[in-house]
Image (tube, rainbow, N blue to C red):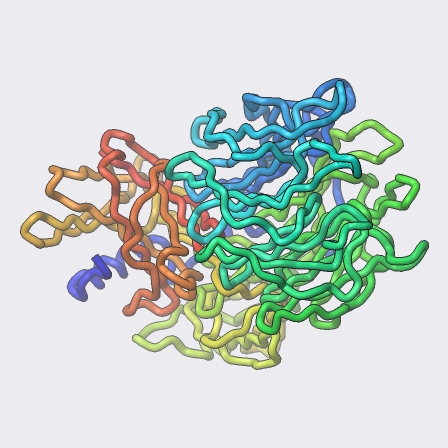
Length: 638
């Protein structure tokens, strides 16, 4: 089934009107996990402390906006098997059960079914030598439980794990603890995890053995690998590309300077990759940074960092800049320090200092645009249990606007042609909704201009305007990168803000219009004779004063039942195979994912409901596009 026929356009309009889209009334939900008022400028603030001090752990942003921290060690004994969940809404942590194996130096990857894959690592320090492990396990947020899955073909730690658009996970390199006469042996092997089977299989070997390197998924679906934590390695200036279609590696050119320590690699919205080197090339000199351009395959030097950062994290922020956090010196001291990289100028500038200097910590971008920094250590001190939040500062005052997805209310990015909600003050002199088949570019005297990273400025089609909120479509052709949004009100007030434009930024509309709960969707039942029947999946419960899921009967085996979802930021996916849907943890076939032809800015995804869901009741719908997970929605299967 590709798309519903025109005779149900009225049903689609009704569903989306209930979700608040077509009426224009899309109000920001009052929860910390989504858009919220920001601090007046860049700042750090303490948040709830972890139950257990730890370093060498992982932190994974779950589909529900919470953060899972797993493993690591605390200097009090062997590696940890304890886990914790951070809730941005409350700023507190709670236990998330225990891993089946103690480990640190592992990887954690969010899968399209919402589970988290933990792979490899180290499970002991003594007696030496330290050796890697090959076990892997899964965390299920729906049940809060851990389960074992297939073992890696090779024991490893210090490796990378990258979710591919096809839903598989690529693991590369690392170290297994073996030694030869020259010292430790880095690995050049790579393998793939298939969530459908729970098994690992070898894929092509890297051209160079690597440990402590970085891996980045490119828009082309290839994976860029760069770096090696060994100053004398001939691979320190090399980079390579993995092609998931052929399972082979090819050279990605030579860095101009090469890394001498731990590297970070950050995919910028313009498709380039920013690589930073923790160590200075010369003593007391600046740490270096380079850019990789996938379109040319060339490396170019960009601005030097202001300080040596051997254990820094690098995080892409909602304004398109990159946050490098923490400074460490060659003698092991760590100082609280951050700086920001501006891709438009190629310059690093100092930013607000954290409360604590730490190394081997984690940094996680939350849907509300803040960065959670947790755990870590200063090498002269035991590991920390403290955590803090970086707030870029996007003030909600006259003259400024904050733009989020109108489906998910996430600050993690927007896409060309996606529906957007901007919040501010004095944005319009009246409240108006667009009427008619064509959206206006001026409504109640208000207009929106979007100037993209290439310098092109376009007027945006408008859905709705009010003094504090404007809903509009990102103009067709808006280039990826940091875009400037300018809203001019009818009284002459001009407000500006920055929006991060990506190729895709998937969000699903929900019946409550807040980006959570029951999906704004309907079901299409295709009977054996080819006839179609359309059924609602949500209903309003007056007693609870909210939308609830209406139980859906999948019927006899001869029926095929499709779930028709509506979202935004999906249409520019590279291929249908890059769109993955899971329902209640079960993979569901996607037959269509693209622009809905009758509604501006709305995307449609058709999913065949698997019969294994019968009797499951209310379950979670997860959509992953180009390895990016949309906000979860819910349906009820009878």
